[in-house]
Length: 73
Image 1 (cartoon, rainbow, N blue to C red):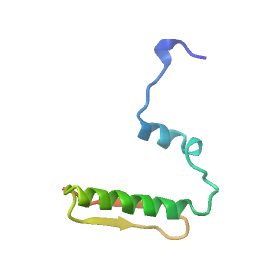
Image 2 (cartoon, rainbow, N blue to C red):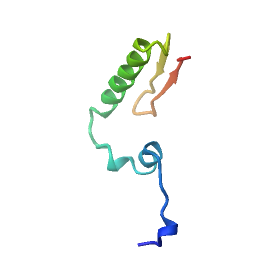
Image 3 (cartoon, rainbow, N blue to C red):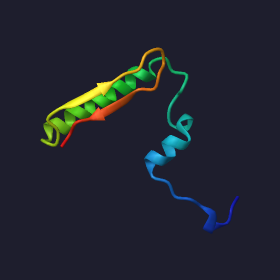
């Protein structure tokens, strides 16, 4: 174990980017569908709160990396 001054504090997003297998079952065939549904739910929440008037999502094929393009203003 490192010294206390060597400990790096990460945000939740940084932690997920570095070690996604700690938070997600990467072998789950429904993982992609879960991401799409979660992204859609977040977009709807933003729209209902008045922070978003339009949202777009771009999906890759054959297991390609998926991403979102938020159009919230």
